[in-house]
Image (cartoon, rainbow, N blue to C red):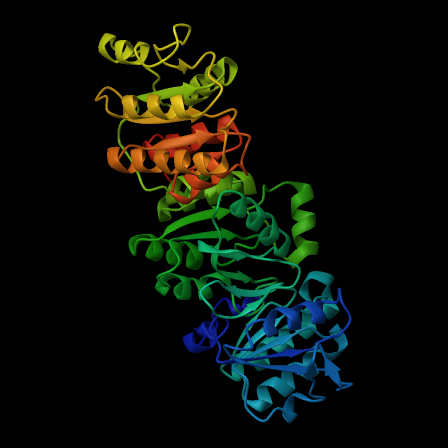
Length: 465
């Protein structure tokens, strides 16, 4: 990151906002060849042409994806609010000149090959940033993957098919956007707004955070960043968003010789000590994670409807081994798995088969459907001696998908009525019952360790940082 950007003036907020909600968008370098960046950017932008004007620009003109293409940016009759640039590196600076001269002030630079590739590329990048800044514009990238707004704004993120939801994501890595997207989709979550910031040559993550802070559809903001040269500004922004009611999850790479080399080649970034970053995250009120899997685990827990200060957990399992694992992992997280009192055990004995284990964890021996587990859940949630429940549903089976859905919804209703955290672990993540529970706000995890970790957060056993 150029030192001169450290004291650069604030970027115009309207130019930032138009990255997500422009009235019109132009794709420069649009292509009719499937698989090219320019093809994918144009294809995604054209999906929303009923909402906004979409202009395609290609030096050869002609027809691209059923639309007439302009040979030059200056040929467009109106001034586009947003320009998405996917041209060869040698044409990038000239294209920036044309865009700025036409009056567009919001730019997404998909083109790569600048600061991340050495001195020559860095020199071009710095010249471009100077021009953009002097024009009062905002440039995301270069070397980025695009932008996405799940509320009906712009969708222009090649290679990524994103699902709408409550999670904002600001990332220096386009690949991680695709990774996190698939993990969120598996648990019925998705993105509100996403910005791939790439090299952060001009617009940096703190510059975009104000937009997400003001967005009512964003409940949680996840951040992946490699370059912490402006750490103070980042953590000040995080602190402000936390004070405003947003949950923040921060992920950075480990500082190792290999990661340092990789980050320099990836985005021209310098990796910072993980321990120092974690401490600053804690001070700012952010949740620090070190992997995509942990990021989604924490996101599920933070978005879950119920929290408690109690640590007494009931473990309900339809098989013995996972119940043993769930109990041990829960206690390792600082939770308690106390033996049930005589009255509660008596109620469960009257409900379950004679071979069932009812002292906590509960093992529903001989159980072949999930309905008795939910009956058990109802009884346990009514007990004052229990603060939360961890359910292991090894096999979510019923004679019909409709009955599975009703059972999943019942889990959601019972949790909502009790106000107590309920989490589920299951390897049947795509079953109708699991999906129904997820849609009711019940966190479901494939891995028992993730379930215990998520529940510990809901029960206050894990603090920020």
